[in-house]
Length: 321
Image 1 (cartoon, rainbow, N blue to C red):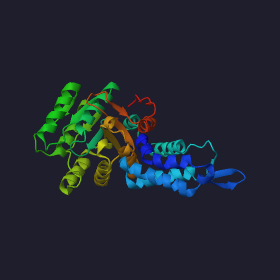
Image 2 (cartoon, rainbow, N blue to C red):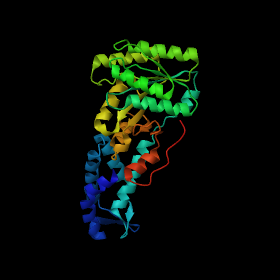
Image 3 (cartoon, rainbow, N blue to C red):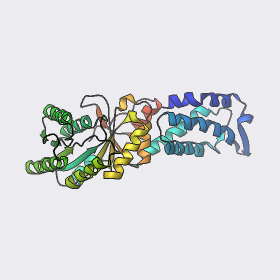
Image 4 (cartoon, one colour):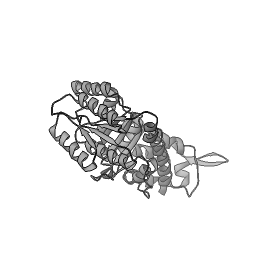
């Protein structure tokens, strides 16, 4: 993302850098000089535009820009001062602060209650929800946790078939009813099966309905009332940008979201959706998904994401649940 931002305000920063120290700064006192506010404002205007083009929501872009201004305004400078690098470091610190405000430890939550631990997944069609469920099940199996899948998207036969295929590949139980049946009943049966067989985890798929459909959102609320999930994950497409933020907000209003799984993160070099969701709805990003393989799924790590956004050396992905 920062490469694109740098290109966006490179003209302004280059013009400022080429001017004399007297042109871009002013004497504060005996302690030295600081950037003129007008010069800084020109840079930050371009920075904010660049953030918006990187799919960062407007309120978040404004917050980040204010953070950078607070960091740089009043800072003492000299002839060796590099405006580009100063803005980069200030923005990087602001981005990391947004991404580390909240975290979610699935390990701790699972250990804190009697099994089965129930997780409900929400999100619209095409966001990669069913695949994310399978990937999380695979990850849990690697941590010696047994899983039951609940095919709660009863509106599409294809969704039931897709989750069934994953269950066969993973070797875990799936509870499913006929197409058009009550999804809340599927969730209930899956939980009862898990209790009877002493399974650790129940993962409930739901219909990938548009978040603006009131009747269907009401049914989502019914599933939650019946299943009483311990955790609700919103699964969002990182490429959807500001649309993903609005979707997350709608689902949060309807059923309450505890955490976010971002899919297609490998194709998103901007990072706007991650930043915007984390700040706008105040919920942690728990996992990121890329590709189709089960192992292409990892616990979210702020340092890894910041390195990715700014094109630095990739951080090491967390291996625990």
